[in-house]
Image 1 (spheres, helix red, strand yellow):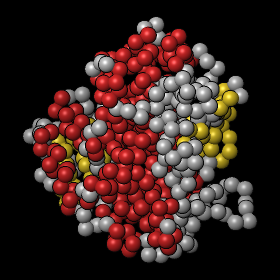
Image 2 (image 1 turned 180 degrees about the horizontal axis):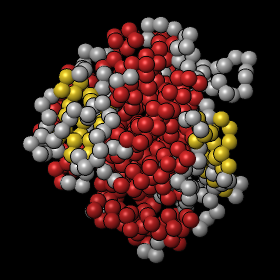
Image 3 (image 1 turned 45 degrees about the horizontal axis):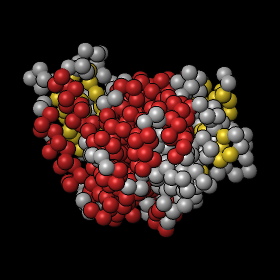
Image 4 (image 1 turned 90 degrees about the horizontal axis):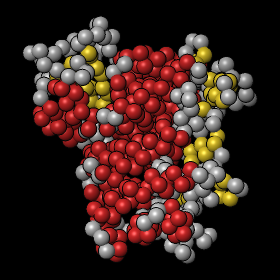
Length: 500
């Protein structure tokens, strides 16, 4: 099987922004293009299958997991920021639209997965023949164009049927079928809703309607980040709805969490990854919306991580809390698997909060977590991409961005849009809305409007530039930060991981 390496690709995007070495970006774009063109991506309804059974991303195991779609979509959002490739934005939005449309519960939480098979046959819901397409599209020329672009053939590419994929570009297929690229695109856009509606008449794969806290944290964070970058309110609303569900139905007293919810019942005490992903997601929600209550909730979860999960003697976090059933050995896991490890995500959330709030105890916990796995990281760095990301964040120190103004006013919204459009992985965002009460966030407490105008304050290592009030001045000011921090790289990561 071939699994999409979402976190590794995010690491490479950060390396590219530091070094501007084209071969690094090529590794990312080749992989993302292959995924987006392959059968592992659902070209009809959006979303990614769990893995590919071949080496071309063509034939998937048709199961769709919430966590895969959260991780991959975030990488596509980042890649869009770096490259401005519209295909990456399209894939991200189609996937999130699928999540909101088909994987969101009435209460606001996100379901876990859909099965690979329907009617006892793997992939039956997702594959086609030319006759299927001809029966749906009344125009034979539309059917011919559709089949040519998505490679729907009589022979098929999987057990006599065709998995839709796009092995040729729009321009090449348009030339082959005798139309312009614009005409072909119009045909595809007009036909896709008809194909999708016809597919809905099939018996669908089974739905795993459990709502798992950790997996919801992943999707909440991705939904919030996409809403921020694309300035798309439905994604922000989706993130807020799921976050509120998490903070009510999946929460217990004293900042504790349940692990899972189904059919009106939440149960099982939360594990490390539940607290870690939930805390990190709530920071994302704050940075996307400016609603401080989500940052305060993240603080409560972070403190619970320290109290109930942290290994005070050796650093890092146990998988289970002190209130779980007592085991002979409390396990700790630092390496990433199908998802980034709970330790790496806990370190990420604590590091971010440490810089947001000037909390040295949070930063220390994050550093000790990375050091706890330092020897393993140096020996097998490929197994620890999320830990490498947080190590980079800790070593370089984030760019601190304070946005001061009133949402809904054109100057302020333009400043925000310019900031959100820019790929700045090592940054924290804080907001001060001028019509609200005195903010509690340390980064904005001493920041005000500039001559009555909304402003962006850019700070790093306790030093702030002159505040900016015009959107056109922002890109060049932000571009200085990755260049200025080039000296922080592999050598410093090795220094941070020298322990364990």
